[in-house]
Image 1 (cartoon, rainbow, N blue to C red):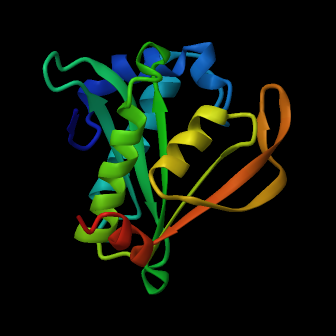
Image 2: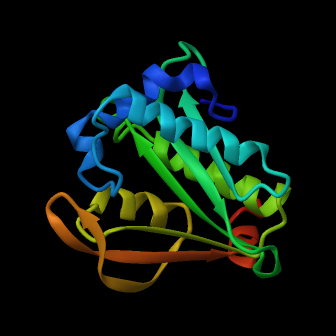
Length: 176
């Protein structure tokens, strides 16, 4: 898979991804009413990359061999003093259960701990999102708690698993 920052040329692919009902199931954004809504969201993400102090990075995820757009992922940085960030991802269902989510989260963790020198990384998912829970645990995250009725999903308010992984845990897991 290839990773570069999200660009304006990703608009059509991003819009198509956001229109898929299965993708929207555990996403709080909702399905955009028009491509203009997606363009506004994309423009905001691109502006985030241009800030003097970058607080958010968003990447399109593409297959190396065919350059197919298969999803997006990102890093939300916390205040520098705390040396932490939150990871998130969204994939086209055609590419679920093929290892791409695990590869993506592993790559983001490597960037957070090795390039950005962070201390702690967080992630979350709806308790009904068993696939994301499995991916996060496979990558070394630990469930630290549950936030009750935290996610406003189409199906109603959902409880949310809160995950964390520390730099020491990452280093111990990846020593070999």
